Length: 193
Image (cartoon, rainbow, N blue to C red):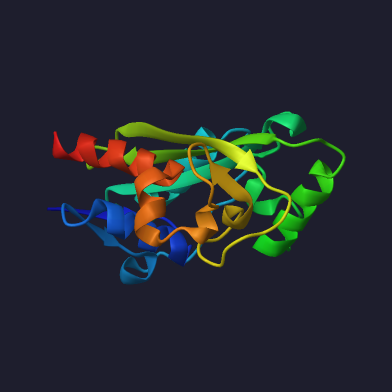
């Protein structure tokens, strides 16, 4: 059984990771180890931001630690919002504002709005060595929000091979196909080796 700090304050991410990594890995939440502040995510890539967060958690708490960063990349927008996905509508954003800005920017383009979600997990092991794992899911952005589950851009994203958005899927369905699930599956396999 591995016990690892997941350096995130995002409850949705914690729940997704716990469901996918159980029962092999027990997550330590930031509140359990007095991890109180997030570092500034100022890298130009999702890999860089994931490493910033993982290094910060490892240095603060001295525990094996992982963190993730995710980008929604829309081809008609040259890969935007990309590394700025979480703050696409500005620093004082919320998920709804980000979705509204995305729809506004896509309103002059014809469907389909080809897109992909990409998650990178950065893990710092007990020896301080760094490892990266990536999960990608291809799909499209639709013109209206559908569904109430999930978070972020889930109500707008339909993965290839499906007719439902991530927000219309159950947690089990989403955890079977999502970008984060794919990155976490690679991470879990690595830890089991």
